[in-house]
Length: 149
Image (cartoon, rainbow, N blue to C red; front, side):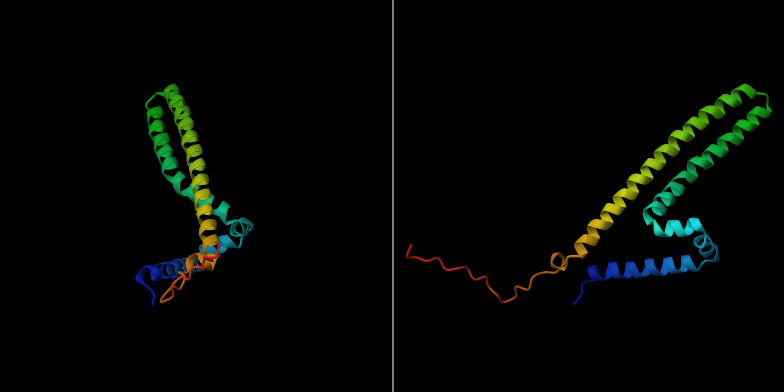
């Protein structure tokens, strides 16, 4: 008899598989996966995960930088040409430092996920580590000590 805790990973695995199947059936995704880049990323999942994390974490800083650039463009139209160049330079340096941090963070998170995956798959690869020994009704027999000695 399985407990609810043992059914949850199976249900989660099935729901992830269904979600991935729906994602691959999307025409835009399937068109991307047919390209050379898509084939390369399919054969290198760690790199694909790193790129996905980088893209996800880079959206907000890039959007903020673009908003910053638009604001400085409006200021430039008002006559602050030199000040705008300085602000764009400072903003570019800030964006460079944030994106470098995001890239390093995504690589570290990807490495942690990969280590976790290999540890868990290694544990599940050894069934004696995941199964409970059957000790119902059996007592351990201790070896008899020879009393003659």
